[in-house]
Amino acid sequence: MAKTLLKEYSHTFPAVRGVQAGRPCYTAMCPMRLIPKIFVFDEEEVPPELRAQRILNRSRIPEMANYLINNPQGYTLSAITASIDEQVHFEPMADTGPGVNLGMLTVPMDAQILINDGQHRRAAIEEAIKESHELGHDHIPVLFFVDEDLKRSQQMFADLNKYAVRPNDSLSTLYDHRDPSSDLARHVVANVECFRRLTEMDKSSLSNRSTKLFTLSSIKMANRSLLRKSAKDQVSDEEKTLATEFWTEVCKHIPDWNAAQHKQVSTSELRQNYVHSHGVTLQALGSAGADLLSQHQDKWQTHLKGLNDIDWSRSNVTIWEGRALMYGKLSKARANVALTANLIRQHIGVTLTAENLTLEEQFNAS
Image (cartoon, rainbow, N blue to C red; front, side, top):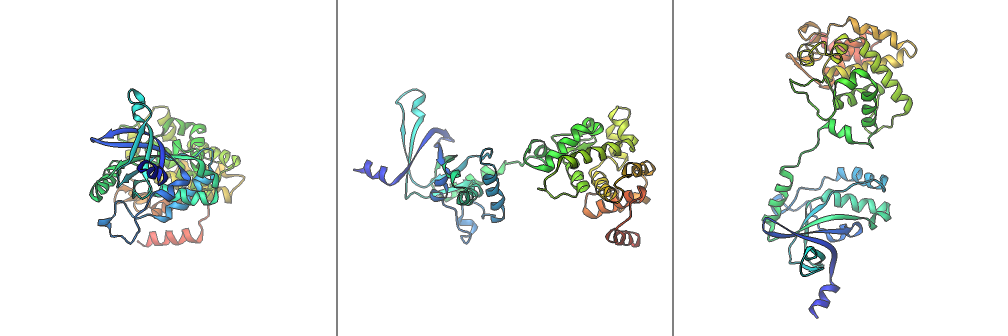
């Protein structure tokens, strides 16, 4: 009778049994349509000391849900980690051998199941299924722990998030094949010779001993400025070609970049002594280039010769302090990028907009 009731009022999943820290744990494949029904999320009004997880950041949900909806054949979701406040029943496939840890996991329907890691995935799945019902038939792995109390659940949340490290922007750009800006950055690096030889692909900062001048993430931002693109804007093949031609031409008029790619000068010396080897200038070149392409569509290549006349030396504080430099240090703040771009505009024959003129007046007054 007890077994009948257990089967009638329970969820059963194919699962693998294991042990962590002396406690049994179970990895099950759960249909996504069941995720919103069986996983409880602590309500926001519950005080932090009585919760087992952070407050749900609802602004993240639409983007995650759209990712699932728009990539039904190519999305990837990592496992959800959850705690169960009651004992579960595991029925192994065999009494001995490998099958002893393969079987069916039965969870009572009235058990409270709290998510320790993955509450935003749960909410996104719930929203995505409302619009794309077929997603409900897909599965997501869930790692179940039998939880003794709230304190243990809170500690699990802290442990799971303590060592989580978000990949740096360059590595994300290198591996993200859905993001148009990342695709553009990879295309430009592959087709602009000095970038191909001098770009760090998987780090967003350069060490003093690095043989590179640029990072992939800084090139991505410079391309956005050049083409006036927002983060998710699409990029056409024509725009890819234009960006490649622009940066190829820029490289011709910054002799130090050419010297670096042929190993005639140390990249570390260039980064130490010149502003042209840093992200603030790269983005400023893109911003000034956007105006150049719009104001001189047919002769923009000729105007870039003006780059040869710029003194890029950091020691020339009369030019760079307050623009690319703040108290002698490079600054990527928006105002510094804009002021650096203004100086480039003046050298390549680009007319300053009213906004840029106002910025120059404020800079000169200070």
